Image 1 (cartoon, rainbow, N blue to C red):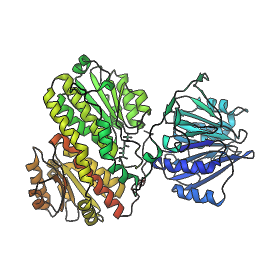
Image 2 (image 1 turned 60 degrees about the vertical axis):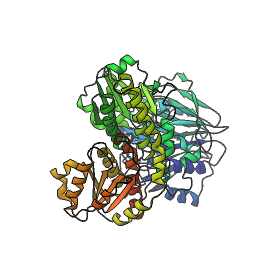
Image 3 (image 1 turned 30 degrees about the vertical axis):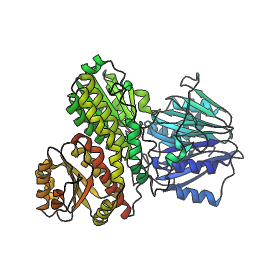
Image 4 (image 1 turned 120 degrees about the vertical axis):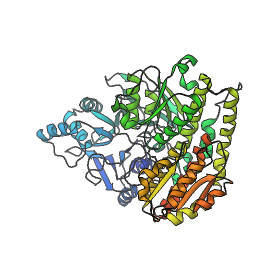
Length: 608
Ligand code: AGP
């Protein structure tokens, strides 16, 4: 969603805000803006489009002020134009506000404020906050913000600047992330950690309803009743390198190449000296694990595809029925959750609004909720009963890659743990699977060591308008993820199907212009997949197969083969998806697309 940054200290604020916004640009890139307080006034600069447009405008006339707030926008209310860009100001132009989230009652408030004489200049919900503050301000900015929050319904993270208080930023949050970076003689406010890391590794995470008053030398936090709060500081271990490109052309390519490390880190320490899988994060007695009679998995997008992989793993190994539901549907379908239900919420960001809503629904119904996330301290970690972290490091590219394979690694651990505790696999079987799993990161390295086949293939198909992705069994979610990656970053239409379903409709789409990507790795249904390949080739389609090393026969049935090392069928998902990530990446690059910031998308979707 949108990115927020604020700075107060001795340095020129505009430099720090622009650098901070650059590391948050993945959260939204429709428009960007900054407000700087100086000499008793607030100056706002905003531009439509990428941050570079704002940077150029600021460079032409750099403000000298040492306090400011900035924003990079992903439009929700109002088109992406300059009037709707943040920061928004009140009538007098003395209060500036940046906001991430949605104010649900903004129309009602807007009508009330217009009736009271306020003049609005944008279509946004955010501008309402600026005028509301103007109407409530009586000399104490923190008090005005607290009073405004009592009138706002919805979700927000806000940072506010007032010309009368040129040393103070007031920040607050509800259901949208906001952190304070605590420095030496300077402090920052941001919606995500990379924006503050150049200046400090000490952070405070604001909780829902809290209001922070941030000066250069102090941070004061109060809760929604105005009572002082002592927030716990967190020290961030990872450094900025992890959030920068490190010699790669794009974050996405870097993150694809970081998968072996992300997998090793996520699997590390999961088997004890006794050979048993360790999963203390589940925080359930063996008896409780044995009493689970149903698993729900709720997630969106790529995380949903990881959930589909997990369904096969849990049902096959632990013999528990699993339902995977996209989060935006989960809570509206009166889900059959009770105290014997385990609900797994998968969200790399930990802040996807639909998934969080599903978590709340599940807990209200008595379900035990375990979150799988990549972001320490994120919202989902606070709302779930237990958390399994994927240790993938920060993912900046909007298209999820390393977090997807790390999620699957974490789900292997969960599925094996459930099977071990319920006795559906014995120690020897688990040991055998684990030994193969340990080899997976090295196999991904092998795939990444030679990109020539995938590059060649991408060059051939880069100008097609449509494509089909097929798979069977665990290959179905892999095909779905491959299709999602391609459409997200290259804008080529891509549809994924269970290969056996194809003849029930999608085969009508086949022409020689529509390439078909088939997950054809070694499996019990391999022969059937080959039959499906023949069906589409008979109708003129060109086929790109993802196949197991040494499967020479497949080359007779395919125009292109992308080989992956051999592993047992249920472990093949991680390996088979890597060539599809690369295929999408190179096709998008050859088409000249911005792979890190595809149009209309944002890294995390914090609105329902
Ligand atoms: C992935 O490439 C997408 N950008 C998107 O589908 C994403 O997976 C989805 O929004 C869920 O995000 P989350 O894992 O942070 O909840």
